[in-house]
Structure formats: C-alpha cells, structure tokens
Image (cartoon, rainbow, N blue to C red):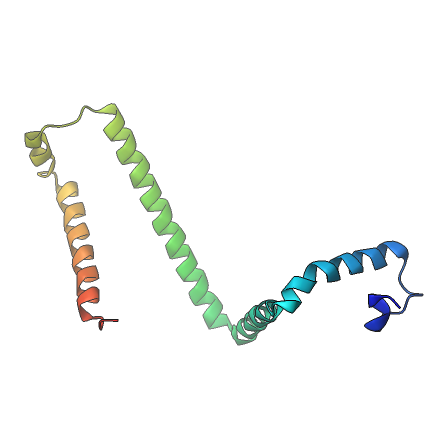
Length: 132
C-alpha cells in the first residue's frame, strides 16, 4: 500500500507521472508537517483570506491612496538623491565659507527647516514612548 492509497487517492485516477509528483510533494512537505511549520502557512493563508473578506471599497481606496503617496515619496526622494549626487560629483567640494553661502539659499534653508522639524517629531515620539 502506497502513501497515496492511505490518504484515499484512487490509483486508477492517477497516472504514473502524477503519482510520482504527488509523492515528491508529500516528501518535500513532510518536514513542514513534522515541524508543525505547515500550520504557520495555513494560518498565513487564513489571515490573507480574512483580509480579503474584510476588504470593502473604502479600505481599497485608502490602501490605493497610501500606495500612491508612498510611491510618490520614494520617487521624489530618489530624484532628489540622484540630482544631489550628480551635483556633488560635478562641482568641487565647497569650503566651509562656501557651505555657509549655500545655506543662504531659500531652498536650502527650506530643506534644512523641514529636516529639523522632521527630526523634532521623531525626538518627540521617542520621548513620549514608555521605556521597554
């Protein structure tokens, strides 16, 4: 009696290649079943199924908006990094006085202001979090 017969699969229905494929699959899945890791896969599929069941139009729209904003932010950051890297590669390294002159540019000051506000928000969040 083969493994396939013990799980109730009719031999007459299966051709030899299919039977060999199923036997190989069961052999590969055996460590997952023995280590109870297959349960995690089933739990993950169950979680995904629950998410699909809960997804309504409003949730999909919110996810799409968040995705578009994330992609837009990544694209903007990527472009800014490429532009800055190109500028840094083509221009000579400025002196300390040159850096101070650069800080006089409105765009530079606006960027520095944004960066400082961003860091202040991060600092505030770490201060407000309870110690672990």
